[in-house]
Amino acid sequence: LLYTSASQGALVQSCIPAMTALVAVVWLREHASAMRWTGIALSMVGVLIVFSGADAEAGSASLLGNVLMFVSAVLWGVYTSMAKRVATYDPLQVTGGIVGAGAVMLIPLSAFEVVAEGMPTVDLQAWLGMAYLGVGASGVAYLMYSAALKNVDASEAGVYTNLIPIVGVLMLL
Image (cartoon, rainbow, N blue to C red; front, top):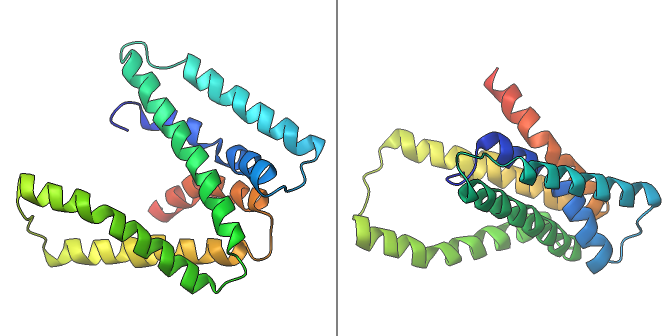
């Protein structure tokens, strides 16, 4: 979001279901109907429209931000397809493994930040906020997503990612 606006980023991220479907069709060999291919194509056209309307004042930085957002959408499709491949396992174990792997990958970056900036002070309210976001919002959501992949195609599960902004807004009410 440093390189693009939140609104453009959200528009680009709306192609997550199409990217998930595309990766699932190619990698998992899921069936793709003509309607699904049409949806993927329309989503890509939408992303191209967003790219063409990148903020002129921000110049190439806005394009860079949109490209980074698009890469994250593709990677979410890859993640979903990988999670579908292990959907027969216990969702709690899958989610725990994913969170654990992510934590291990963050250790070098965290160590670099502590060396460069010093150890931050974190008050109780911040710890509670991190616990809520980590366990409540992210942990439960990933657990539910892993459980859902047992029963639906990866491309079908990807469609529900478009509910994220709606749920986010409803939570603020």
